[in-house]
Length: 148
Image (tube, rainbow, N blue to C red; front, side, top):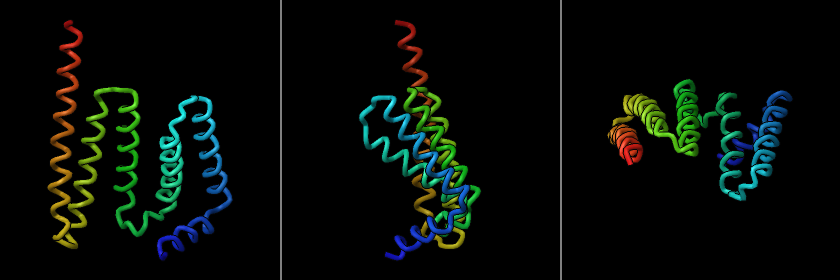
């Protein structure tokens, strides 16, 4: 309930420009969805949530996150990775690996305050290794397909 009140307060604290930017973003995302004829409603919902999250992160409402710059970089690398995944580019894995690197930094910073977060560093380190392997394997499979 506290989070819901915090989010509602965050909407009230938006400037006129931020409200216009947010509403315009939602309208543009929705229009692109309708024009694409996709019909994938989950994609639309995720896009609207993403647009809203970017506004809050930009405003500094990263839900108490003291590492706003690093969090913003994480959102950016995630967006690039997801976009390249949709485009079926092998480079998606490099961007996910970059995001893993950012998250490793965030979890190391959190671990300095509370060592119980150290397993998250290990987790994202393994994701990093797996993403690098994914990039390698996509390139290898691409070469094999080109030879056929």
